Amino acid sequence: MTNMLEVADLGHTYGEHQAIAGLSFNVGAGELVCVVGPSGCGKSTLLRTISGLITPSHGSVDLNGDHLAVVFQDYSRSLFPWLSVQGNVEFPLRRTTKRAERRRRAAEALEWVGLTDAAKKNPWQLSGGMQQRVAIARALAYQPSLLLMDEPFASVDAQTRFELEDLLLKVRRELGATVLVVTHDIDEAVYLGDRILVLSGSPARLVADLKVDLPAVRDQVTTRTDEKFVTLRSRVARLLNVGKPTVDIAKWAAAERESLAEEALADR
Amino acid sequence: MRVFTRGLLGIAGFLVVWELFGRSPLVPDDALPPPSVVVGELFTQLSDQMFIRHVIATVLALLIAVVVAVVIAVPSGLVLGSVPAVRHATRAVIEFLRPIPSVALIPLALVMLGFGPETKITLAVYAALWPILFNTIYALDELDPVMVDTARAFGCGRIRVLLQVALPSALPFVLTGIRLAATTALVVLVSVELMSGSEIGIGYFIMEARSGAGRMDQVLVGTVVAGAIGVLVNGGLERARRRWVAW
Image 1 (cartoon, rainbow over the protein chains, first blue to last red):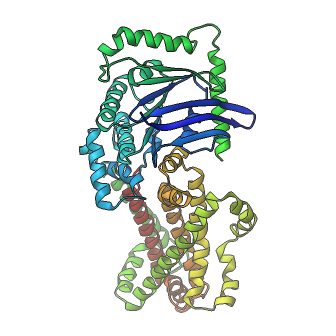
Image 2: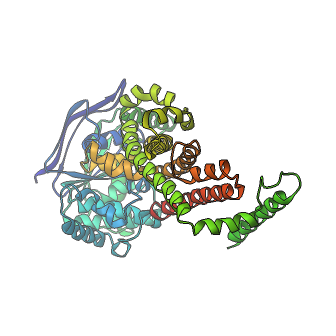
Image 3: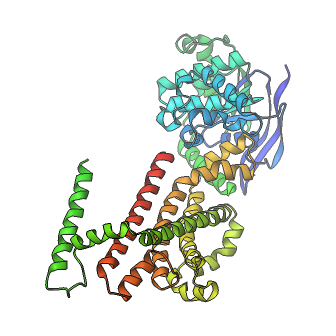
């Protein structure tokens, strides 16, 4: 299997604070890889370095393709309110593609996510789950070599979340897309992933690279009760020290706030 | 509908007070003609070609001034709002120029530009620049970083982000700025016309009516028409904002 993404010895520091350190991993073509780690461990820094929004202070990121697309957690701020749903999906194609072809690809992407009827609407007229589907359609229309997703389903209710997870699995199966999902949700990582990368707390280092030995077609009820699913989620939970008294949740939360604040500063 | 009815009642009340006040012995004769007289004169004037030309002159000058102000202020605002170095360098000059009332610049403008329409238009542009400029800068300060990240992640460079993300997202603020600017520009235009910085326009009409025959009814016709232009421009721009930038 050829690698679509190669990350080698990646490190990043904001001033004194080291967010990520010595991260090396690959994502193969057509793979769906989930990155899990405690809150504030530097997951969003990792995503920002891979997407090129920040230049890492150490190491390298190599994309084996011409471009990637990002789906952010905050769909309501990521979609452009002055554009229709279709306009949003066409947005990344403006630079590269002629009008007629843009139309066609946007219509196609909206069909994949089941939003053909909403094309002419404005994003703010849709529910949260539908807005995130627009963001996914926009990313897919761009035909990225790598689809990056930053906590993509963390801002929707549980029911919608299940629907969106299954939608993601369906489209990536049909399109053979390569996907990297950053999440703090262990169940989600196991349910979605072909592989799971477990990160340690700040600075983020790679703790484990686990293969998910579940069938390609998954189901919210049966998969989640599958013995392999349960075993794997416990294993990831243990790696993340979840529930152990040694884990200081307050400290994590403080570290997360700090790293976000520093990141905001660094962006200025 | 209820709001509309209440609005009409308010106007009716105002007209009654004006009528009573105009006819009362408290004000000297002919100093404040009552609305019944002014409305009659208004219809007379509206069928007078000369008066219509005065109105057109002021409205046209207003239109030109606002367009010129937008063309200068929006791009400047985009640059000042997105390049901190330029903003810091120009801050002192802007803070000095901004509080100067445009009316205080009338004598200077008359000497420099003469009595043609360019004088009043220049001064109106000067007054209209600030609300548009500051609203544009403010809008860029409020620009959502997630939107910028989204565009950058899709490979958009600085210029593309500025024109395709920052500018449209600033639009609601910019339109509010234009609305404020249009009202201010109208005040300045009529002021300059009043101070004989022009040979045509509503302000000039008012001045002539007062200084010649002392026709206060005509003075008030000019005032009412100037007010009506202000209301129409303000309302029109507000409707445009609601229609085009509904988010």
